[in-house]
Length: 151
Image 1 (spheres, rainbow, N blue to C red):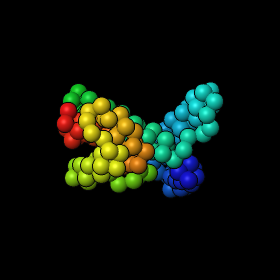
Image 2: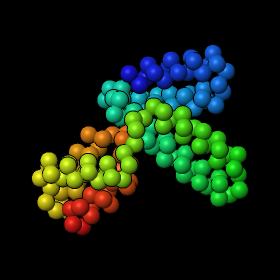
Image 3: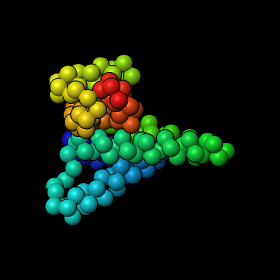
Image 4: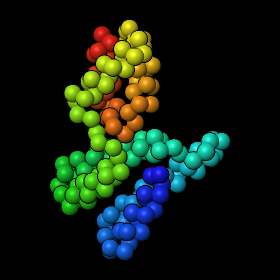
C-alpha cells in the first residue's frame, strides 16, 4: 500500500513542479529499492509495510541528526533542507505517540507479556516493535521499558 502511495505522490509532485517533495520521494524509493535488493539477497521477499515504516523512521532520525549538525555548523539553509525532507517523510508515517501514550503502551505490553524483570526486556521490546512500528521512538522507549521493569 505504501509503495503505491510513493509512486502516485511522485507523479503528483512531478506534475505540480514540487521539486523538494519529488526529490524526497525519490530518496525514499531509492532507499526502499536498496533494502529490497538486500532482502532478496538474503532470500526474503519485498519489505512489508511495517518494515517500510521502520525504514522511514530511520530516515527521519538520520535527517534530524544531519539538521542538528548543520545548524551547529552554521549552515541553516542545509538544516532547513533536512527539516523539509523530514516533513515529507513524516507524512507517510502514522502519528507518533507522545510520552504519556508511549508509557501507557509500554505498561500494557509489560502486563500482556507477563514481563517480571529486566531479563524480559527483549521480549517487551520485540512486542512493542511488532505492535507500534512507526508510531513509537524505540530509542526513547528502551529506557522507559528498563525503568518500568525495575532496571
